[in-house]
Length: 144
Figure (tube, rainbow, N blue to C red):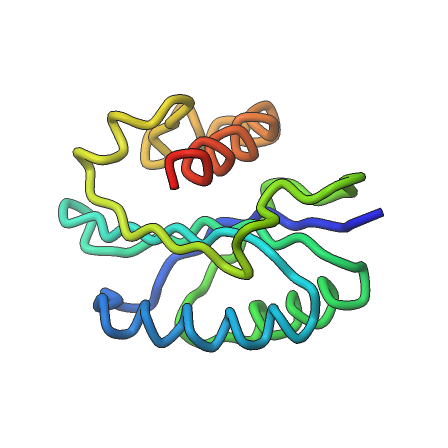
């Protein structure tokens, strides 16, 4: 049985492509050593002048707990909101120790299952959208 966490957070500042590559490199090394797979999505919203992270991590329970401690303590983001957590029988992101997507608005419109997390409908009750968060992440994964 594998555990997983899907969370959403705000970046403290705009994250450059070089910084994202550094995050990805460190995450991949750490995740491989701890049997974690997953996907990290980053988007900078020019209109609101803020960045957002959406991530899923999956792996053995102890590894997920250790990873969650690291994620929660990372000063590059704040207002971390768990959208979903639980168990899987098998991995959903088995090919990626950590995949990364740096998105712009146009790319998002083409993704099946995309939800605009900047609108009031999403925030009125995000718990109703839990299956959609995983579906959205799976769609990014399937797009390669």
